[in-house]
Image (tube, rainbow, N blue to C red; front, side):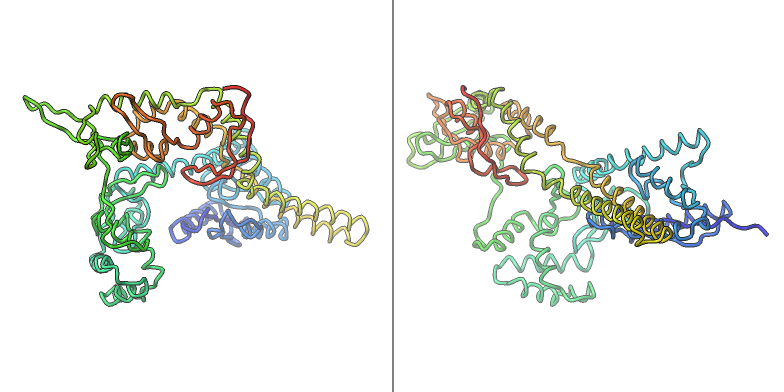
Length: 533
């Protein structure tokens, strides 16, 4: 009677969101097919169900550790350790071969359902390539995923599950790519819409709105009572989507969605005002005009009020776009400035305030130095894993000491060492994963300095819709203009004001204030600049 090879199957998904899908089921199904084809008996299946890689403990590798321990405790009895692909347990080549080596010491051979693994020269080459590609795949997966989702948003399609009131279009369940917007939920959509319109009266609290939704039928439609938390998300997180706008988190841009809007943009602004505690009639209107990007940024020198823009029609129907002050009683009221004239002078002024290369060099070095000195918290995850690993190494050394001091018998000591070696292996893999993606601050600063060094070109290349925001960063309080004298002295954004101060022979490049960036705030220390402009 033939004795079957005994095998275990190890299954892992990399995040919680995959657990409810087909990934776990698919891996088990393929693993069992492989074992059946090879004549192996499946003794046990170990499933790592979406343990978070952010869990800085051995708990996020508990099933992997159990699988390794199972092979050790059944030394010589488990001949095969089966995975769908080698990247199920290790994401770099070094970790892969470390696992393979320790399994072989227990009489267990690593098997991949989809890859060739063996001891023949060609099999070793392929195995090495598979492990290397697993490492490479992990490095680019996040970028590819981000790029794909960003592209979908730019096409007006929400790549994730839509908010309450809409139905997922079912592309994922069909195994297809999402190419159509999510349709409305026939029952829930009108209920949310009616509740939001009623909320605009400004007379409802969150709890009252929750009860109102249930009166309209939301509880019957969803099968559960509407909570304040749900209402809070409806009136804040989901508002842009409801108004037909998709916010791209990768580019920080708003895109018009293809899905059916539930409310208008004006209604969205009204709800935002109510949520912020402002009057319901103080509606924020869209002040963006792509033809006149400098309106509201450039101020009249006489009254210090924002200029506006318009187009006049001359003989023959020729159009003359121009800027002008419309403030009543201002001496410059209706005195026009040709659009091309003002915008060309604006670009020249940007060139005037652009920092020189010497300042940019010091600025770059200062930011990198600051990052290295104060930004170490971003490496905290790797440091914590290193701490776990160091503690395990100390424990391992202690076991050796206890063996030498005859506290442990050689058999018990060997058992304890094997357990500790497996824990160390799991910790090393998690440490490797935590270091796979690190923020390249030097590359980011190089890009930033190039951006800062040619603001005129940057302004010209920006889409018209982004120009007002860019101008606000450069000139927080606006910029005055005189038709005869040109632009006046303006309060500049922080980087440019630092450059202006440094050119005046000040000896510090960074004021002991707070540098505001688009995504975070970072307190900066005083840094020496240089002795001359």
